[in-house]
Amino acid sequence: MSGPPLNPPLPNSDSTPTTQIPNILKTLYFLSIELGRIQDLDDMLYQVIVRGRQDLGIDRMGIFLISEDGQDYQGIYGTNKDGIVHDARALRGKIANDSFFSALFNTTDRVAYRLDAPLYDGHEQVGVGWNTLTSMWHGDQIFGIFAADNLLNGTPLTSLMLEVLNLYGAMLGHLIARLRTEQALRINEENSRRFGENLRHLHEVTMQLSLLDDPADLYRQAIILGRTRLGFDRMGLFLMDKTTKEIVGTFGTDPKGEISDLRDYRLPISQHAGVAEMLESRKYAEIWPDVTLYEAGVPVGTGWNAIAILWDGDESIGWLACDSLIRGDAFTPQTLELLTLYGTTLGHLITRRRAEITRSEMVLEREKLQMMGTFVANISHDLKTPLSVLRNSLYLIDHSVDTVKNKQRMGVMQLQIDHLDHLIQDLLLISRLEYSLTLETTEVNLNHLFERAIQDILPSIEGKRLHLDVQLDPQLPPVRGAEQELYRAILNLIENAVNYTPSDGTIKVRCYADVDTVHIEVSDTGIGISGQDIKHIFDRYYRAETARATVHTGTGLGLSIVKRVVELHQGEIAVNSQIGEGTTFQILLPCAAVANF
Ligand code: ADP
Picture (tube, rainbow, N blue to C red):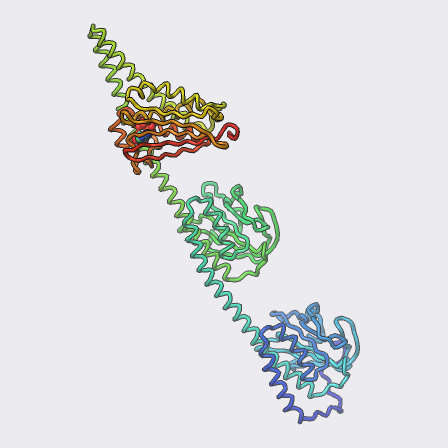
């Protein structure tokens, strides 16, 4: 070791008055009580220096903490050449590179000292005198060192001062170790409290997510609630595509903390080495402490990254990723535990939602088949009736010479042909409307369509002696639409009103406009529709029992045509009805000036 010798014998002039020792012990005792009251480690270390100098007469003091592996030192507070206590965190280095520090570590004494040594303020030498290093122990580990010298008062080193330093070091060792344990306990307690709170939040989040029907909403909210309610930093949810063996994004968080749509993101699972390994060993969650962090495949920073696999029994359906990009929070075991629980919860929710969707698709398919069966039965009946009337009439005309009767028979035939024509028109129209997403449109004046429809249906209205009340606004603005289809919709509504209203009833037709909407109303004083039936009247082939008893020739297609036509015109349809009192259909269509299709 270079420099002045370590722990040389003190000059003979050292005559320690042993009578002072009880006083010093008393001072140390009270000091330990006062320092022991300080809760914050940093505050305490500051006071260690201030009070060490003030109460124990130590000249200049500095305090250092040692890293857990015992390799590095770091200054905390020191005293500068003017005697001012200051922050010394910039002073740090390897113990192995400092001969004085190394010497303390290599001796069994708790204090190392040198006489006539260079004295420093930071890295600048500011004098010569004695200096000491005293170790602070916990168990058999040195976790801190404090340095002292005589730069300011120049008094010689005495064995009493060495004893004071030794005792102060031992006392501080205990105090600091205790404070650190208390702090660690507090952090643990705080963490478990937060974890308990998060478990409660997890329950609430699960309840909220389980109410969402649409899978995309579920994925999106899983990220939003994961961040806002469960306290995760950046999150992303990825699902497995088993057929292509790819991972597919759903929603994530961009580097600014906004929700990001990752539904276009796809990557073969094999390219995710870490995850592939987790799947292989059936792990639930894993953390990578110090890695590059990505946003949709592009590096955006570094930090920790954790992944929880979403398992459905033995199969993985995806994973939940979480990292520290935005807040840079330190990683805690609780984070991984909560992520694992959240991953399991989401796994269950997503699997359940998928099963429900498959089930309701099956139910829908079955309902469609049932409706189809009913339709085929109805339609063949509807076709058979007019056909047999036609066949009979033809037979009778063929075998009769009674021209008057034959003329009547031909009238009956004409009616049946009209009915067949209507039925076939409806069928063709509904299949055409089913497959068109948009229509060929022009500007249409609905007043003309109403006038035409009323004209066409007038014989039936007169035949049933119905009262007709027509209120058309002559200033009605045009709508943008498909004329033929709109005519069909209007005709169907008026036809229904006529069909389902007994003789002497009233049919009212209104058409008017407000700012940008045309309103159509067709109402009657007919048989009405029950609450049960009203839910289904727009379904194809649906006919209420009361309707079947009243009108034998209906197809159950009219209103589904009306509804589809209104939809294709970006309009709305509503119905209001009272059994035995009547029914009102109301349609809203955008005026041509505002229609955007
Ligand atoms: P339909 O050919 O049977 O009239 P729609 O699709 O036009 O078929 O109507 C479906 C059902 O809605 C009808 O069968 C009837 O039960 C009911 N409905 C429609 N319009 C009226 C109305 N104005 N009054 C009473 N019931 C109606």
